[in-house]
Every structure is written in C-alpha cells, then in structure tokens.
Amino acid sequence: MVLYLIGLGLADEQDITLKGLRAVQSCSKVYLESYTSILLVDDFKARMEALYGQPVTLAHRETVELEADEILRGAHEGNVAFLVVGDPLSATTHSDLILRARHYQAPGAEAPTPVPVKIIHNASITTALGSSGLAGYNFGQTVSIPFWTDDWRPDSWLARIGENMGLGLHTLCLSDIKVREQSIEDMSRGVLRYQPPRYMLLPQLISQLLAAAREHQVDFLDPERTLAVALCRMGAEESATRRGELVRAGTLAEMLACTEPDEAQRRQDEQDDEAFEEANPTVSEKEMDARREARRVQRAIDFWGEPLHSLV
Amino acid sequence: MVLYLIGLGLADEQDITLKGLRAVQSCSKVYLESYTSILLVDDFKARMEALYGQPVTLAHRETVELEADEILRGAHEGNVAFLVVGDPLSATTHSDLILRARHYQAPGAEAPTPVPVKIIHNASITTALGSSGLAGYNFGQTVSIPFWTDDWRPDSWLARIGENMGLGLHTLCLSDIKVREQSIEDMSRGVLRYQPPRYMLLPQLISQLLAAAREHQVDFLDPERTLAVALCRMGAEESATRRGELVRAGTLAEMLACTEPDEAQRRQDEQDDEAFEEANPTVSEKEMDARREARRVQRAIDFWGEPLHSLV
Image 1 (cartoon, chains in turn blue, yellow):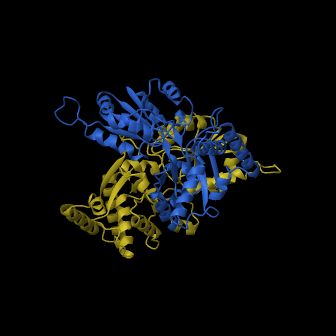
Image 2: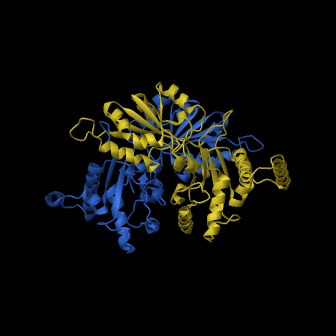
Image 3: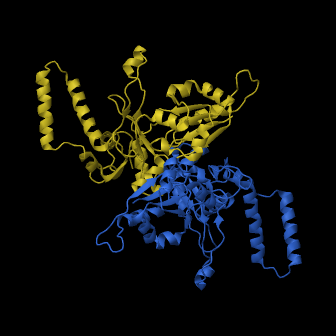
C-alpha cells in the first residue's frame, strides 16, 4: 500500500488540495506531524477529523523518530497519511521517513518490503513570500533564527544573510518555534514534562539580528537603513479568536518601534514596577526581569499577533 | 467584491485547495492565466469547467496586459477568479494586476474604487524541489534559462549559478516555455499568427549551461563532475496519454548521455540522412540541420517526456 506525505498548506484544514483530501480519505490511519509547524485555527484536530471522516493521531517528534516502524507497518498493510503543515518536504526532517520506507522490511519477511511513498505538495512560506511583493528570483538562502538563551546564542545565520546581501539578494528569516520542548532542568532530573509552546515574535527576531550584527561588527544590517517585510500568519483568515494574515514593511528600527512604549507608557511601566517591588519586597531581580520580558512579549503579541512570524 | 488570485498547484485540476475551489465557485467570472505555465493533463479546460460548474476563460498575455481593466471591472461588480498554475505570486508578472486593482477607478466614479485582492497560495516548483532530496535551506537564487537563438544568447544566469556555487548552494534552473509566441518574421510583416508551444527540454538546457560555461571559461560547471537532479513534470500522474513525474540524478554528462545515440544508432542516423539527401537532391543544409534537430528533440521527449523540465 502507500505512505502518503501530504502538505496541508498554510493555515487551516481548508488549505489541503482535492488530491490530498482524496488520498487522506483512502487511508486507514492518519497522522498529523505536529512539531515543525502548526495550523492557525482553534480545534484544528476536530475540524480535520470532521473533514476527513476519521480520527487523526498527533505525531510528535518522538513518535516519528522512535516509532517510524509502526507508521511503516501500517503503510505496509494499508494506506497511511502523514500530514505536514505547509509542504511535506520543506523541512528535511521527513526525508528520514522516506528513506526508512524504501528500506522497510516487514516483520517475518525475509527480504526488504519497501513501502511506496507518494508526495502531495502544497504551499509553504517559500511560496507565500510572494505576498511580500518581492520577486522569488531575488531570494538567496533561507535561514532559521533560533531562540537565544543566556548561554547559547547560535548566530551562523548572520553570515548567510551577509552572503545573500553581498549578492543583492533577499533572505527569508524563519522564526523559531518550540513545541513540546523540555526544560534543561527537567531533562537533567529525568522529568518528562513539556514546556508551553513558544513562538518567536518579530521584535525578538529583529533584536537578535541586530545584536548579532553588533557583536560581529558587520555593516550590512543597520536598524535605520535595512528594509524588511514582516510576514505573519500567511494565509490565515481573521476569526473571532484569531488574527489573520499581516504583512508590513519598514526599516528594522521602524518595525521595532511598532511595539516600543512611548515616553508616557514607559514612565507608567516604571511606576508599576516600583509599586510591585514595594508590595513584594522579597522579589528578586530575576523575577523583575521576567516581569518586564512578559510585558514586552504581550506588547509584541498585541501588535503582531501570534504565531508564525517571518521576515524577508 | 473580490479579485481572487488562486494557485492551481503543480499538475492538474485536482491540485487546487478546498479554499481555492470554494472561492472559484463564488465567482461570476473565471480566468485561467495561460502563458507562464500549463497544467499537465489533456482537456484541462473541460475538466476545470466540470469541477467548477462554470465556464473558464483563457487569459493570454495580451488579455492580462491590455485588458486588465476589463478583469477589474468584473471584480468591481462581482467576484472574479484569476487562476494561475503553481503559486499565483511565484511569477512577478501578476504583481501588476494587484497594483492596478489597488488603484482601480470604476467608469464614472469620481474617486478611486480599489478592488480588494485575495491571494490563495499553492505549491509551485519552489516547494516541489524538495522531491529532489536536497534541503530547501541550501538553495540560492533561482534562474530561468531562456531559449537561445542564432543571434540572441542571453547568459546572465551563468554568473548567478556561479554565485550560488561559490557559497556552496544549489540552483533551481527553470527551463523556458514559449506559448503563443510570434515568429520574428510574422511580427515584422504584421501577421498575427502564433507558433506552436515550445518547452525547453533537459538536453538543451544542459547544453546551454555547458556552452555558456565554456564561452566564459568558468570552472564551476564541469560535465563530468557537476552533479544535478532533473525534475520533470513534478506532481503529474501517469496516464494513458501522459508521462508522470520523473526525478533523476547524475552528472551533467550522464544526463546528456541518456539521450545520445550509441555508435550503431549514430551510423543509422547518418545513413538515413544520406538516403534522404539522395531522394531530395534540392534539400538545403538548413533543412538537414532542422531534420537533425527534430531527431534530437524527439529522443529527448522519448526519454524525459514533455514538458516542464527543471534542474537543481
């Protein structure tokens, strides 16, 4: 039988293609890959199940990496759908599943029993970036900007942006998403507990770009001169509970200014913090930093909405 | 009302998304853009009309460039769908229509009456290239390789490939398609007559790559060492009359060898040509060249199938 890798497209369950839907409906088992991206609607699982007429199993990283054989055993016996938000091959993660399918050997079989794989492509951010108004031909390599922590600040992407800009090319910068991640503390104590999902927001993405540019003393990223287009939640429709697609152009400084408090607001924030410290005299500086960070994040969410921010 | 720019995806009428289909069905007029790409099925217009339940108007380059106002007048009065194979914004051509929609002024109106535009993205070759097995992150700028003629051999794309390779990046090379083109002779005589559609085939694409590399004496394209993946008709399904998707990797020389005649075949070709010249003593050298070229094209079609060849 067939293992279908099916792209769900950009935003909701209606972005699947007719061909993709027909394939899903031919399957005896349906997995939704749920760690490289997400659909931008509430209750997406229930909506998908209603559309497909069958249950959907969420496949987390550990399912796909550790239980690939179970997925393939299913595909050996009947059709199996492995659904991926965007295009199924935009993330290289899933090449592994394809290679395993080619070399699959069913339990008890004396020779390999390869599972045929069929790809059904769909839109991803690499096609949706056309909505920036920039020409696809003028894009260089794509980079992912990972969350920095206090002691882990990877920035190899800065050189990639520099290479692109040296050739006069745009760069698609994808912001990090963290779904079902464990904290380092929990991992070191052997506690299996997941952190709430985190999506990098544009102000943090831009701040990391500029911080890396300062640290490496490069001149190709300048807050006042470097132009960018923010692409948020491409393809998403506005709903009562969700923000829709947002596209906005400006210099990096202009983008940051969108969520910076004005002078009056800044004074108000300081007064709030002082009042809080007076009311809670034992509060640590670290807790106060977390409080300020939460305020910044909230302003970013208020302005840009959540999640899935990219910059070109 | 709304002007919908809707991506049809890669290959046939079943590659439209559910959202796209719903939008088409809400429209009072449906155009199919038919000059930047094509669907890979026979009778595609009839199949689309059966699926949509309404007539589809083919929009050629001159329709869109000269009669944009008519399209927009329709969208001012009701919903209009403008369908594009692949993603609607992968070709920058259609930005023009979006800009005109923003500045549209209905006949008799005293102020602009902008037409809202909604984009429904879909897969294009820029997502389908994941099927090459190469990582999307490692691609640099995309190039289009145009048909060379005797006196027009544009090759600025060679420098782009060199820039990508200098950074260790892959290049997506798109082959030229010519639909409803006029010959220079007809144009100079004012005759409106279209040439049959032409699709650049892989052997010609590779030959042009290597010829340009020789002329510019660059060392980054070497027939024996440069590896490539041919992507033909991505997403297309095999049918009684059509070849399906074909993906094949090798050096440029290996790719060319796929359609080169062996020694016996070469001798047979020469004998055929000699017999033809004897039977037609007035045949010109130019006609004989055309005969040899037609044979090469036929071999390329026999091996690679037609149309839509790309190389990464």
